[in-house]
Amino acid sequence: MVIALIISVLTALRLFGPGYFPMHDDLQVMRLYELEKCFADGQIPCRWVPDMNFGFGQAMFNFYSTLPYYLGVLIRIVLPISILTTVKILFAISLVGGALGMYSLSREFFGHRGAIIASALYALAPYRAVNVYVRGAMAESFSLAILPFLWLSIYKVIKEPNFKNSAFVALAVCALLMTHNISTFVYFGFTAVWTLFWLFQKCKTKNLRALIFSSVLGVALAGFFIVPVAIEQSLVQGELFISDYSNYTGHFTTLNQLFISRFWGYGGSIFGENDGMAFQVGWPHWWAAILVGISALSQLTRKNRQSIMVLGLLALSLFSLFMTHNKSTFLWETLPMIAFVQFPWRFLGIAVFLLSLASGGISNFPGKVFKKLLFIAVVITALVFNFAYFKHERTYDWLTDEIKLSGADLLVQQGAAAQDYLPVTVESPPLNTAPGKPVLVNGEAELPNLTKTSSTFFFDANVSRESEVDVPIIYFPNWEVYLLEGQGKRIDAAPSEIEGLIRISLPAGKHMVYGKFVSTPARILGNALSASAFFILIAGAVITNNKRKFLGLE
Image (cartoon, rainbow, N blue to C red; front, top):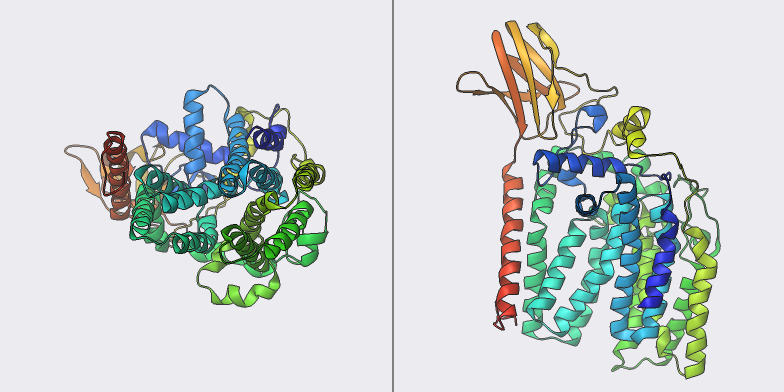
């Protein structure tokens, strides 16, 4: 474990230092900043953020995975550190956590040395460096950290179906569902094969019951997030996620990029073969895969589960790599929903996971001396060939939270994802910064101010004659608007034409107008599922801790 920890820490070492570094998805600071606003306003779970779309707001966390950012808020509550530093710590957690997860998983099958090999290869996979130091893909990097824990928990609950292992599965399922929608979709089929393999090996009703219980509990735990994602996706313009640049047809890899090229760059994925970023499997990775594949074939028997498992992992890795190549176009055209993966090279993540895990089988090679030398050679080769990738292109030493979240820098981040989760009622997204007060559409009224939080707004209105007013917030279910004078009265709110802003009609008179973002039935259902599952998890832990069975699980 110590060697695996040291190697993984080395991959994260260059994250730290003064300032910040550029990345493709340069919204990590902004997302954490917005989530903290939600917590400060009591909007928990957070769904609507006020500053995106140039200040017109966005239902970001109703759809975008939240777990890394919730963890970031917790870190900021405990430690008096900047948002920039917190983001760097989160990236480091994803790198170190993934390596330690791979060590724990592979040790179950290949012992200490095999676990170090698998962990070193996983930690030093070029694609993992791409995710952190080039793309800045926080959610995907976290999903690759969670995956080995998920597979380990599934294996353990099938092997020994008790409540402790069931809870482990539930937490891992919940964590993945809350971390990255696309990765969850990509990993699902591969995880199903892994599960079926071990169920077949240990086929008992109790094992299957424990697995189903833990999986359902995990889905329910994540209910507050996944239920609205599933039910309310029709509220946003999903086609924007698979059109133009995000169309998968322009982002296939080549065999040269996967296996031969040592190119490294900080540019983007472009249509054609002259991409500015690397799509390497990693030389040590496919070399080790060939060696372990030959060994597994030579030892293959019906009773040798490890050889069968290794060959199965290698076969799955080849399929995942095939999915990155344009020869797999017929599958992309056939399989439903796969277009939302957007970039075929995303299958590199599961590919390096499978290759790294299978390579732990090197520990089964015959001959103590040869096996020891091979172990050293694989680890050193991975360090020599791939460690240099784990660094950012440059650093802005002078950058602070205050600079990043103000002026031109803030404006860039506000508009960086203007078309994400755009409601279907918006024909044309805002292109300019939201005004500081409501806009009079027709009628006659004075609208001197506007105060906004992450889930409310308030303004005064002196209306001479009935008027239509646009509040500079994009309408999304459910914004409710009230006139506060007297007993208070709810008034109708609907999206305006073109920009889809909150439009209200105000009668003549002086008014205090108040708006709040409230839950929909889907969000209420999701919250209730999560609360119920959490109660079951706690109750089960208490009961089993007292040496009693819970739902048939010890």
